[in-house]
Length: 176
View 1: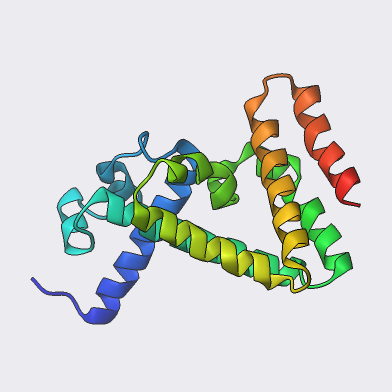
View 2 (view 1 turned 135 degrees about the vertical axis):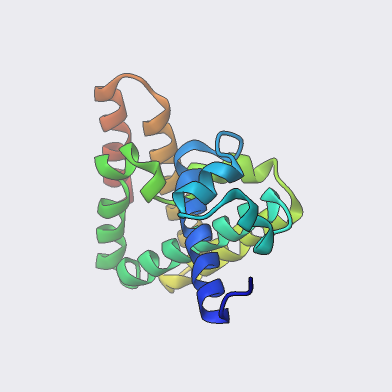
């Protein structure tokens, strides 16, 4: 049975959005295609009408997540005051504690580094757009992005809650 094109596009977008959240929350290896499809309200078999492989879904999910980050960077990163606002928004407890709703780069950067060239291309394209979203000096944008990512990654990686809170606060202070 063929579905109208509009419905097929909506299903595809839903699959990608759900996959992006699940991958950011649990990583590529800890999420199955069946789990993604169930969370999207579809059958496992319907996956192959949209993607040839799980790796194709991963690249689409990374591109989607990067798009969300680009929108956030454009909203909060356009001015010097906006950059501080963005750092405050990014380096917070909610972001630290809910990677499924957060930044794709912080949640999946290491997995992408070990991934396919298609996965890296989706990540890189998003990173380039994020770096240019705030305008200004590219080196400053790279530094700030690396500091923000590192702050969240380290805060998530330690067990001691006080230490975990200290890391993003230190990064925020240094970014000024």
